[in-house]
Amino acid sequence: MAKHHKALEKLCAKPPPADLKWGELKSILEGLGYTLLKGKGSRRKFFHHAKNALIICHQPHPSPDVDKGCIANVVDHLRTYGFI
Image (tube, rainbow, N blue to C red; front, side, top):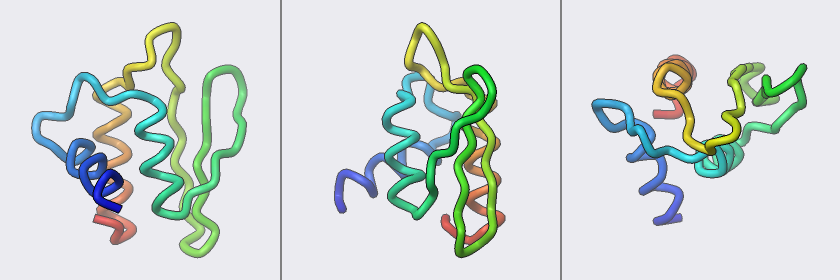
């Protein structure tokens, strides 16, 4: 639980972290109850069934670092749905 809490704090940091890895983001969202769905190409969708909430992100490649714009969108989404 502590690891998940630290990762969530890192996600919400200001300014957005430049070193958040795709695996960390995936872990955070799955820990909050999101399910990873496949999309076209490197587009990934995370769906939360209970809240009927959808997040669409680009899975970074070849570097695993998540784009700051994606991080900002995820944080806004999580605030909107009351996760943070």
